[in-house]
Each structure stands twice: as C-alpha cells, then as structure tokens.
Image (cartoon, rainbow, N blue to C red):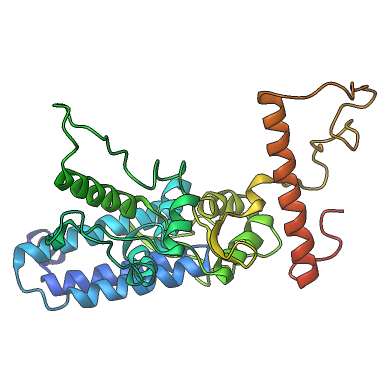
Length: 338
C-alpha cells in the first residue's frame, strides 16, 4: 500500500548535463554498431568519439544544452537509418565516406596545401590575388562540371553597365566568391582502395561484413523493449551504395597526356543482371541493330541519334575494358558475366 504512494509521490530523477552526455554517447554507440557497412560503422564511431572529446571541456550551460540537442538529432538520424529509412542511411554513408562533414575537409586539405596564389590583379594589393589551380584540383573541377558545379571559372563581363572597363576589384571579388562556392560543392576524390571496394560492393562481387549486434534496446511508451534493427539484404545494399559511388571519383595520372584525370566508375553505366532477368540486347545483332535490319552503307548517321549511339558505345567499351582489367588483376572471377 505504501509502495504505490511512494512511487506516485516520488520526485522525478534529474540528471546532470554530464550524465545526459554519457547516456547519449552510449545510445549513439549502440545505434552506430547496427549499420550494415563496416566502413560506415567505424568512421561514424570515430567521429562521435572525436566530437565528444572536443566538447568535453565546455562549461557554458547554454552551449552544453545546444550540444546535447545536436547529439539527439544525430541519434534520431541513426535510429531512422537502422529502422529502414534508406535516405537516412544514404545520408549517414555520405558522412562516413567524406561527401559531407569534417571528413570531406580532411580529404581536401592535402590538395589545398599545394595551391599557390596567382599574381595580384591590382598591383601592390595582396588581397586581390586569387587562389591558383593545381593539376589535381583542375582535374577534379573539370570532372565535376555538370554534376556539382556549373563552371570552373566565373563569367566576367568585359565592360560594366556604364560602358567602362570592368573594375579589377570586382573581378577579384567574383573570383574569390566563385572559388569559395565550388569548394563547398566539390566532392573530394577517394583513394583507389576505397574506390575499388565500392565498385565490388555495387557489382555484388564483394559483401559487407554484417554487424555483430542483432538486437538493440529502444525506449517505448510501455518501457524499454528489445527490437531487431532492419538488416538490408544484398540487393538493397547495392541500391544504397550505388548513389554513394556515383558522387565520388578517383584521380588517375595518365603518362600519355601527362595530366591528372578525375575518373568515375564505369560500373555505373552498365546494367547489372541477375540470373533469369531479360537481357537488354535480346534480338540484336553484333552491330547493335535489330536482327534482319539492312542498313544503307552510304547513309551517314548524324544528329542526336548518332550522338546517343556513340555515347552508348563508349560506355559499353569502357565497362568491358574495366571488366577485362579486373579479371587480369584477379579481383573478379574469370567466369563472371558468362
């Protein structure tokens, strides 16, 4: 009889900010350990640990409240990803591979260290010197034109509205503003090892290491309850990792032209089939024409149809060359695709 009264009249337990932070850290670790990708699990866990250590010495109560709120927002994102929200999972993987967040700036930092400023546009004014280009940055910018950025250089008019030559101070400001914008939108290149790993995962040749945690404790209205997180099957994993691979490139040095080139994966241009699916080229001859079609050898193909055909042929050739190369290196079985 007294136990019920004591429960009703008992004051709610008030946790300090430090206790709330420790509890939040443990929840974040639990949710992170359920991600299906081992790289995502490790990178997100490292980032959470670094962030909590950076904020460990904060004493301002208002600042600590805001940091706890940010941590709970991250926890909500991880929880939704583990509950089967593929867009939240994609958002988490973009942070893990360096498309967003602090890791992106860490990957771009070695490239930006090599940049040497150009000569000042206005003599004896150092601030008018715009940042220059390096071969790696130029290749990265050119490769992402039409994807994340529109132009590598801003369009600067020759004359102002009044008909006078365009002011050099405005030219310097426009170049600085444009460079800052494209550095925010640019996607850093991946190392060749990570790039090939994503290719193998998207192709289905390699599989991710599943997490060890099978159940996770979730707070419900009725109290804590063990719940099994959503485990994506192999097909869903490939569909989630494919947009991740589409955003990244790798820098390749070509001795023939003595230049760096941003290379995107040719895997993305090929349609992957499983056993039993209809083939794309069923009823088509070796030249890519429907069987039984007689072409006029004197007719020259031009316009959009010719451009589409050349583009499709180039994509197919790039994928076949990539497949032969990986088979020679022993990274793909010899009987793959037969």
